[in-house]
Image 1 (cartoon, rainbow, N blue to C red):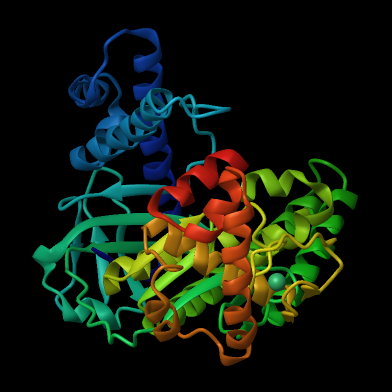
Image 2 (cartoon, rainbow, N blue to C red):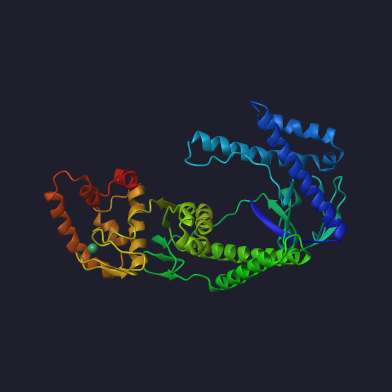
Length: 428
Ligand SMILES: [Zn+2]
């Protein structure tokens, strides 16, 4: 499934009709949620029956294409199902009890209620709202697919206009070129990410700039009198800037993730709980800035396309432990260099962390590293770290013999399949 997006060009009256359709979709969705709350044992089937009933009861609900009504019911069901699965999984904290939507921005049609022109440069919405024909910007890619392949059409309202998204049923086939390279990445503030080979990807400056502008516009809104005309204007401007920032963020995430996946066969990353971290006020801004979670989502997406392995590792101690000898070297956030007195490893803090992430990732996957030197050396261990590494091996063996049943030391040495898990649970 791929999504193609075009911008709609119409008159004010037409846009108002689109708004009506969106409002109706919201009404259907909320009615479904209400119905589910008030009755017990409501399944997906009951909700779709409810849709038909609503159409009979309300004239304007009947205006919305029947399949679009069903799609709204499906959306309601999705949020209910998510709530159920969170409960079943005994997820900690909020379970996401379905809520009513107040500001829906989209309506989804399936295979009816719309019609593309032969040249695919305009679209007509044919349901009861009679929004009519819109010409479209950005239709080039639409020509590559059959109409029958378009399974859904979504109208989306944004700060700068109305868009349609076409969900096209097509297998994206990507031939991954295997490079034999495996990598661990450490997402950071100084650099967007650093990988285990020491390469750094910078934070996008452009984004920083437009975010500053967004901040300024936000202040302007709060200075304006509530309910006033000027406030409305300021809000509109701010919304547009929001859109710009989110587009830039996405753009950066997609490009960086795509490049990372295309050039590696295995990617290990830290399983960051961004939500927890954003609560920590000092880091809050920068973390949401860097939009790590979005980046990881795209890495996962591309990895699936390329059919390569990704592994999320528990983040505990990745920046503290020495990647050369696994000695824990305490450091504050401001210390940017990792320096191990035991084995003499000196690395950039993030580079060290990225190497640990890779090792942990292999542990989680059950790759026995310590016992298999060959595999380690083929997997691109940077030359600088090789010398101390062999010395550390001897030392480690010593540690192992001295140890009086210290499982932690054993884990450090052994890196067996279970060690990743046991470490994860003990640390978490
Ligand atoms: Zn060390």
